[in-house]
Image (cartoon, rainbow, N blue to C red; front, top):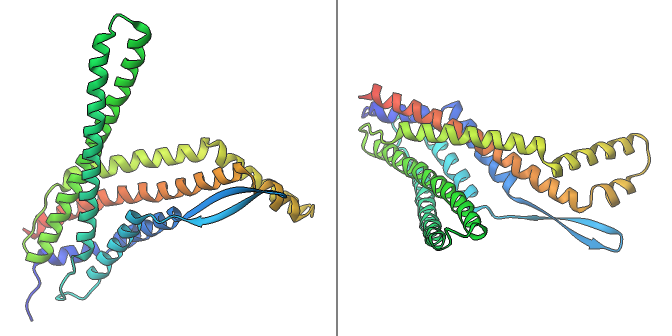
Length: 275
């Protein structure tokens, strides 16, 4: 039987590891938390909740791609590694790059218009100051879009090197280090943002308070009518549930981003050993 190249064996080991399984589970949870949609509508008896569904295509495709990658890496050594999951992820990165590039051009054009307008109203503080503040804000947005584009570019190049290694057997490692840096930093920022949102969100705090009151009502046997007709079916509850789902999806995505950075570092080290 032909001997499997060392680089492919190392891909199989990383892709079939517990860390990769945990990442696939996180992507599953991100998709699950992105699907429910909660709205409220008025009735004669008060506000009522209506549960619907979103269709987060990118989250669904990412979920499918990671499980495909994990499944193929769990196959016994010697069997061909499928690159279908990698291809899906690369397509998603390419689409993201296109969207970020378009947004970058549009925001940059608006910023240019503001700069020209500011030059005409330089001596009018009533007009110049708002233009200056808007320009400063858009400058931050431009930098953010550029960083997001570079993050997707590094991911695209890294996935390309993984695909090349899986198909050719020769080790390739492009953009693993910058991808790791961008992924870990963005994951830490998203994680902090999600935690702060959970702590300081008035809607989430109101929702949690309502559940506490509902439990107290049940314990006091004061009737379920209060729970379902007034406390858990108002507009605040809708906002709280929506925010809570968004925070849960954000937490899973943030931890997943950090884990992707760790796996990129592991892949880089593995390819060096394979050489």
